[in-house]
Length: 512
Image 1 (cartoon, one colour):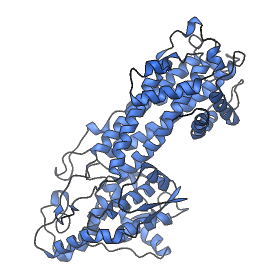
Image 2 (cartoon, helix red, strand yellow; image 1 turned 90 degrees about the horizontal axis):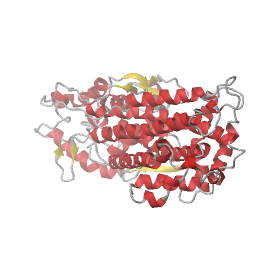
Image 3 (cartoon, helix red, strand yellow; image 1 turned 180 degrees about the vertical axis):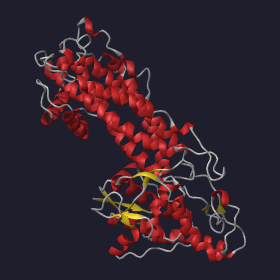
Image 4 (tube, one colour; image 1 turned 90 degrees about the vertical axis):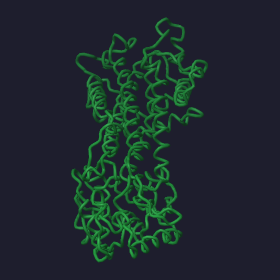
């Protein structure tokens, strides 16, 4: 198992996902203590001076002009944590909380926040012990970062809030009790430390990282699903020819077209009707797949670029810049992430939309080029995959609602001091639902296409790469000649999707 070293430098999407899902460890770099000391010294000096410094010796938000006496500074920092811990809804899952611990530690370790090394060290300690703060999933407007979620994340550092140790229920137990069981003393915050724990976009970063990682697999799976459907529908690969693709050279389109060419190369099914009249032009859901799938790839590339920048950014407020000045900033505003998440939700939803149209063609005998109704050899007595299309249609329609951008909304908070917000937390949360729905829709298509290829067995075999994919699917989901539960079949194929992509890649040089 690899180790992700938290030094304050940028992380990758894969770093975040691997640590969050327990596939990598995290440790704080030895150099962090020294690199954080410069900004920490500035805050110590500011506390001793007369000038108001936001969040150090003043209140927060609309209370920025309210001066706080030196004797109350420690209470000020713990008060912001407990008062901002105002989230609602079911707790976030373990992977998301682990990602948040990693990401907030990374931001503080960058050395711009003026806090002690004790804070990122404690966050990494909780992560490695798998002692996870209970963080409600709702209640952020994505402007001063995700204040409520980060406050719940920070509470256990001072022995407040709730922690769940391995084996604990989702609601966890009192943090002080769990810390005591592990011999951990709660921290007492120094000036600015409470504020530095709640200002940031890390919760948005975490959920967007998961969606980008999972969507990368889905754009590949969509190409495989389409190629299987082309085989089952006796389609043509002519529209994927490189000679026509290069005259509209969008990067993602070129990749998807190359994938489809490679997957379909040498197909006996395509050769069996190469010169027949029915294959002059296929429907758009087949013919335009590179244009649709490719456009999704391009939006995914954009979203990854945005998140990669954010994973190396400092999103605290205020920050101490290298010349020692304490500067107020708006870097915690979630608009870049909100836009990226909304765009990705709209884009990836189209993978399900076009996939469902291919499913419908395979099930409808008027358009399936000789396949039995609903892919049922004994249709009438059996309904075949009729209801699988209902499921896909339902999820596609749900995605249309979820794809409405949250980032076009705003609502003033904090006495109108924070008068324009990103709603990025809503954007990344609903994106996760879209990603799950798309995965389910692609599983429907692969199930149906595998059945269609079985029903073409008397015509010819598919290409070598797609035959390997078909064999993999059949190892988990036998052909359905007599009706049986469909949900279990769809779930099995959904679980297989990463392996399906790997199998396809093994048979197609350059597949991506």
